[in-house]
Amino acid sequence: MGKKCYCGQLKPFSACCASYIRGELLAESPEILMRSRYSAYVTGAIEYLVQTTAPELQGALNIVEIQKWARENTWKMLEVLSAEGNEVEFKAHYRDRNGKLVVHHERSRFIYEAGRWFYQDGDFY
Ligand SMILES: [Zn+2]
Image (cartoon, rainbow, N blue to C red; front, side, top):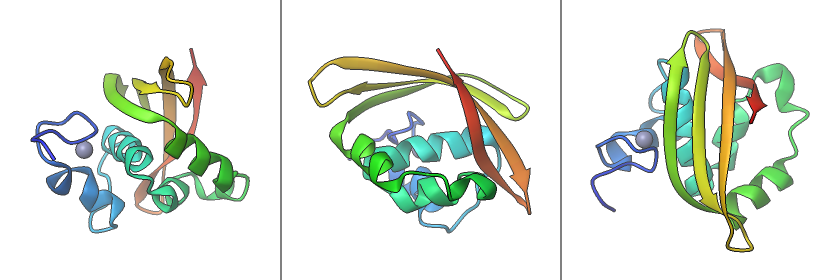
C-alpha cells in the first residue's frame, strides 16, 4: 500500500479510513464519513456501509446489490468537491465490470443521530 488512503488523503489507509471502518473511531464529520464509506466500497466492507446508513433506512438496503456493485467495480479515485453543513458533493471514479470508466457524481446528505453521522440520501448528477 502506498502513502495515500483510498479516499485520497495523504496518509495510509491504516491511519485513515481503516479506524472508522473497524469501529475504533466515529467519523467526526460528514466528509470523513463519506470518505470512509468510499474506502469501504473499495475494501468490500459492506457491513460498514449498512451501519453508517440512517437507521430508519437500513432495513430497505439491498445488501446483495451493494456487495455486487462494490465488488464488480474497480475503484479508482475519490474527489470531494465540497463539504458544507450536512452535505458533501463528490465524484467517485471507477471502472465498471465492462471496463468502462464511470464517474459517480453525487451530493450526499447526512444526518446526525445519537452522537454519530449517518448517510441519508443524495442527489445524483
Ligand atoms: Zn481515508
